[in-house]
Amino acid sequence: MKEKEREGEYQVNSHGYKEGEPVKSGWEINSMCWTEMFLRARRRMRSLISGLPCSFWFLLLFGAGGLVLFIHLEALSEMVQLGPEEKLSDRIRDVSGINEGLKSPIPPMQFPAFEPVSPGPPSHDADSSQVTKRHRKLLKTNPVMRPQGKSSSSLSSSSSSSSSSSTDPSFSQSPLDLSRVLEARRRLVREICAKYKTKVPQNITPQRVSRIFVEDKHKILYCEVPKAGCSNWKRVLMVLSGVANNVTAIKHNAVHYGNHIRQLDSYNREGIAYRLQNYTKVLFLREPLERLVSAYRDKFENPNHYYHPVFGRPIIARYRLNASKEALRTGSGVTFPEFMQYLLDVHKPVGMDIHWMPANHLCHPCLVDYDFIGKFETMGEEANFVLQRIGAPANLNFPSFKDRSPSSERTSSKIMQQYFAQLNAGDLQRAYDFYYMDYQMFNYSKPFHDLY
Image (cartoon, rainbow, N blue to C red):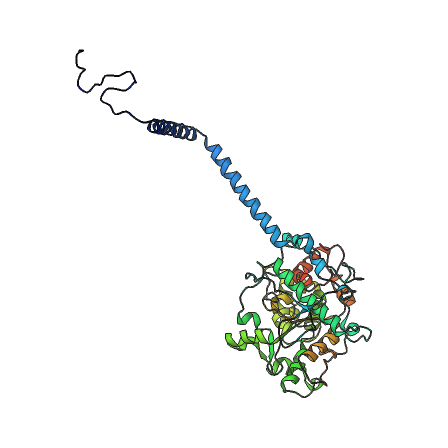
């Protein structure tokens, strides 16, 4: 017999195992092999990764970031633009082209048998009066269909003077057709609010409803837009509430300084919410630049003990070279170009005023779902339609007289264009941009050629 092996050593038999060592099964051998292969692969991967240059990781992260940005922009584009099957121009039609109807779900003003429309989504708070070129370009990818026969570059067809449109007996629509027009306006406002939902307020605050006047007896809320028939609307509210017997007997100072009509911000939050939910909400608008010229003529071309010293003096001091002491003292004689310099100045010498503030900043139509959105250009018919719907007395008709300076010609499209002829092309574009949301939201045509 051979010598014993040294202690701790085994003899190898014919099967390749050391004598005394337990024999391993096949699955144990395979498991050991796979484990060894995995450990070797992991070591190789570590050495490979550690050997890559920093530039490779930078390119990898840059590519991932670019992919995320691309996906975000695609989502943003889908959010802002409507699909080809639901273009805005397919939704906003003229009266003659509307075959389906809509129904206002908010009492007490009931429209005849129409389909309900879901309101647009809520939106963030940002009261910017300017709209970026990117937003304007995105909106123009889905142009609003103007009523047939109206040019997108001509103002006269879409914003004729109130003296000709509101009293013209030839302009008349059936209640059904007028209801459809009104609902189409509401639908357009929802569409524009949805497009710019990051640019409009989200929460109701007393300040944002401070221009809304309340008449509790007939449950009506009227948002005041100066130079768009607001004086006569306040007269109507005074008669509805019983403060006066007829609209013609109410003087201008009693309308604006008599405090006869409560404003919505004078109620507590519960009272505000209740009235917004249950009352008929009314808004009347006017072609933006025509409204602006009307305000300028009223406040600066006529004697005024408030606007001349408060606005006129700082405007003349800032924008008039070699101003006389008399002009600096009184603030009288502000020219239209000087007024427009003030309006378009980012750093104004004096703040804004409700008479030339954009209507969407006064009444917040993306926040308040107005039941009735009327136009100054067709005030007579549409205002009387509202009065009929809320159950006003049969003998109460909306007045058509001019509240101030009755002898002067009412501001019309033609007069507006005469004033803006004093400005250069750049200022015309800036003026349009200033009121851009009003033009889009309330479906007014561009006032001049070559505006983008």
